[in-house]
Amino acid sequence: MSEQIILILDDDLNICEILKEILSSRYTTIVTTSASEALEKVKDSPVDLMLVDFNMPEMNGTEFISKAIAIQPDVASIIISGNRNINTAIDALHTGVYDFIQKPFMDISALHMVIENALVRRQLLIENRLYKQNLEEMVRQRTRELETKNQELHQSRNRIIGILSRAAEYKDYETGQHFQRVSEYSGIIAMGLDISDKEVGIIRQAAPVHDIGKIGIPEAILLKQGRLTDEEFEEMKQHCLFGEQIMKSGTFHPAQLIQSGDSQTEGTYSDELLETAARIAKSHHERVDGSGYPEGLKGDAIPLEARIVAVADVYDALGSSRSYKNAWSEDKCQDFIRQNSGILFDSNVVFAFFRNIDLILNIKESITEKGKTCSYIA
Ligand SMILES: [Fe+2]
Ligand SMILES: [Fe+2]
Image 1 (cartoon, rainbow, N blue to C red):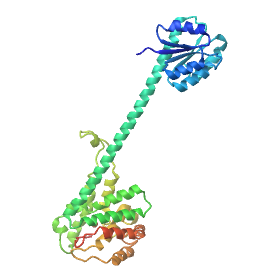
Image 2 (cartoon, protein in one colour):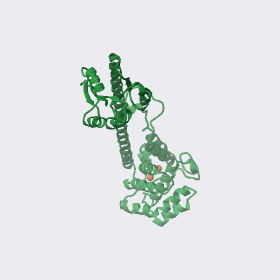
Image 3 (cartoon, helix red, strand yellow):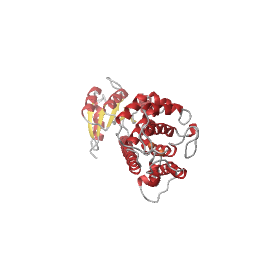
């Protein structure tokens, strides 16, 4: 450690000289009898410790010390006090002064001990502060890393959702445009409801995988021209449960995020996007009057996101050509949705749909592949 620097300030030159004599063998000393000159020295160079007389003509010792601390916050200070000022000097201890030394100096080793203790205490305080700063910086750094990881995880989930909806297109006659439109319609409807922007975004992202479960349906049923038999339709209904299972398989133990060992943790990782997608896949054919499938849920028992996708999905299917029917006119599609408000579809969802019908029509116009047919069966 480099030699420590002690500033000695006393308006009595004799005291200054005595202290310099005692301390200069161990420390570098700066000596002055003027408080204003001492402040200039504190401004000019680092000081570890100040020995300051209490009674001085320009300002008293505690006034000087508070001014010096404003310049060098880490500097330690000791008041030099005559007997007459002893109580005031002791009071100064409450204002951040480390200690006091009584004049005249009777015990040199005690003087050294007081100074040494003050320097050690100062060093500990500095180290403690640096440690806290370091710790805070480490926490900030770790938080930034976690945020980045979360973002990466979120982006990769989004990509997986996109890939899954593409996979569903390959297995089905549904066009990519159907999935895109259902996604956009669902987002627009969700916007018209009293839910947060974040939830709107999640519903919009999750909607395209509503039929992902069709991956598990035999092609003979999925690609059949014309209507399905009752048995085939029963099998077709299974796509809702298959879809739910596929999306739920994306949940995992948190420990798997960090390591692939045997670590077991209670509960599963919560991911709103995958969980929402699972609810949509399972319940997008439920109808508010209980006539839907797979569970025959009624009203609010059907998850809101599934009630939203139900309107978006049916509206789009009606307006598209199928292997067994031509596309319905726009008026007929809208009439069907309107007439089934509160019967097949949630009336609030239908209201939100019509409130933003201009946006819906814009999407319909902009995401349309002419001449392509779909095999919507529901
Ligand atoms: Fe479906
Ligand atoms: Fe669909």
